[in-house]
Length: 369
Image 1 (cartoon, rainbow, N blue to C red):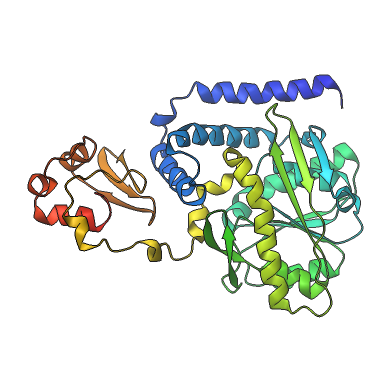
Image 2 (cartoon, rainbow, N blue to C red):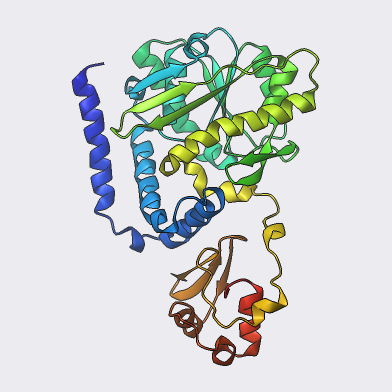
């Protein structure tokens, strides 16, 4: 790779960032709701990050998503990447493997390198991606094969196909590899879920890939991509994971699934602004309702109250004020009067100002604390 090519690549990323900075994001449709969900997920999964930093991190996430859109059709993206770790797995094109990854950083690099190295593999995507992007994904593969003279054969499978697991077993037994995004959490409705610890929460994760590895003997290889501060890319491949003799399918699946999410959690915590998963990880949360406790009687008799900013946020949605619960991911339309009251502490005798019923509801739901 020529130094000028890398310089041009970084300049293109800078142009993407400059273009985004010229947009008034607050006026973009859906910005407020997307940021509310992003902030709630950061609060729940990475509570050590101050809320005062959430907006800047969200804008950085949007910048990284713009980078990803630019790189989607960049055939030489694999040139702008350092590769470390288990490089042998990436070069073993004739050995079937299950490459597991997250939507982190420049994650398109992984498929790019597998094609260039001659892997025959299938990637699994959710239904809407399969319907909308199948043609463009296959066009990308065809152009890659022409540019790099590779014999790689790539197919795209619908994760929500009821027969997906049987099809994947056939793929692996025929000598093909798989590329799967563990954070997508999509699959057929029949696929079982396992609870795993992820950052500061517990989520449901699909264990289909660990089952496949156990049944076929094909190793799982965690692979992650992330951007360094200078906008260059790093790809790291972990050591292969394979079931040892004597271990049951359930034990292997449970332990391996947790290992994989621990592996990726380290990178998400280090590069939170590079992970697309903040847009949907709340859908995998386990029993958020169980974490909400009924306030004691003393909560209704305090002298001083304040708005619970750590759990709730207030924003305008279609010109109406909305209260957003970061724990239950619920929204409640409120009056302009209540919005103005909650945003202008200190609260002097809230029971009298709001009325007994509304006051009790605000305390019961943890809005006033």
